[in-house]
View (tube, rainbow, N blue to C red):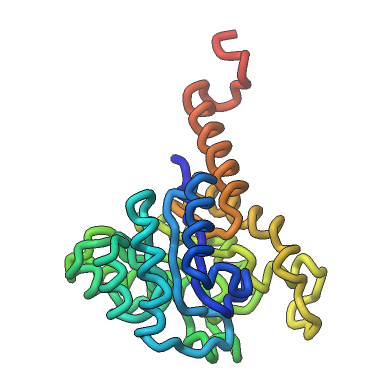
Length: 280
């Protein structure tokens, strides 16, 4: 099974990952087309930053940011809309989006009414306060139970395609994020398609900088988080995750294809058989 690659397209002036490089509509569309050429299976268009400490964006402004980009890209690739607002999700679906990527895990009624896919993500708190003091008794169990409840509600409402996402970096410490990554098999075992987005997150920056957990020093900058981002994506693929949400599309697509080819080759040849030794 080849893991799907979702490319991140932030049409915002204040995203943590790209600093507003794609805020202009034409620039955003060009970047979306580049990701399509690089092999993205889905392009995820968002008009509101959900970085830690971010403030909400007016719904009208959010629609203004994303709708022209969705309209331009939807004929060429599957488009998802990254939003917490029902009106934005509805407008995005009308513009051609077929997946609602929902960090609030509340928009299943919109997905049910429109008969499109829906991603339920776990977040403790909201972007303004989620990193203030994240706390769990058992982060893996609590995230799993929350996502399954929301997925069941979506099923009952008639959503035709339901994904779950543990919400790496959304109301989690570095330890919480690493525990969730380590135990992705627990989410995969639910039978729900799992999506993971660890790309360029700050906890990867703390690891890249060699910082101890809880250190107050700044993490490594975004441009130094590529290796950790790719490693996290590959780990997720190996664990059976169905999609990874990433900024570095080309490298992740290559990794996904390589893993998919290796699985196919191993299955065809049988375990323990190297290429060229079949039938020897």
